[in-house]
Image 1 (tube, rainbow, N blue to C red):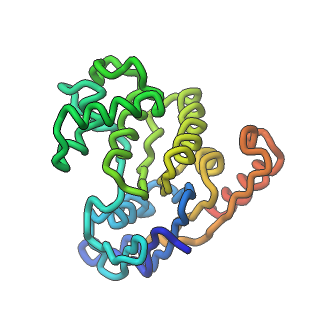
Image 2 (image 1 turned 120 degrees about the horizontal axis):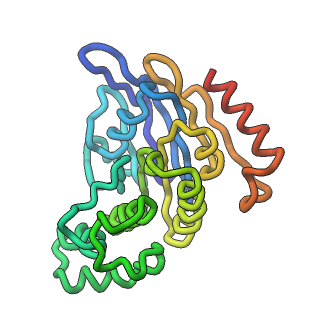
Length: 243
């Protein structure tokens, strides 16, 4: 049974169709990629899934409830980490708790208890400019987690990282998502990222953007999947779909 889904989503801008007839679903504990070239409408769709934009047609459903146009019901992290430069790492992370009415001291303690889980121990009192790119993304993901949502939407969160850091973040996120019970939809135009991270991938193409393929990614060897023949078969398949 789907935890989160959208049905028949269509969106125009100034009478020009941008996305059309989008249907997708997310099961509990899954990581699902939304893969496509730039300009195909992935971010527009993600804004609709997050409730930031309202579709012209269609619905967004969370655990059987229609949440179309209702922001804040799912976690949403954009490409930029958007950490507040004048707040410490700890205070950035616990901000969602404070905004929901929790006292600052209690929010800090709750966030502090998760710093090790998110690989941020020792960074509590550092400011964003003192953190590496990977650490900033971990802090941003921790803050998104503290929004308290079961579903997390990530819009190319690792695009600005170098290849080595990105690979480390992929492994880290798979583990943290499993440990914390997160269900994730991630936008990417990186085929390797989609294959390494995901249980399934939706491929968007065309103008207006449509979902043209759904691919289940079975991994017999999860730790070394990127070095297997199975991985290369999937990559060729995805590249053919994108063409």
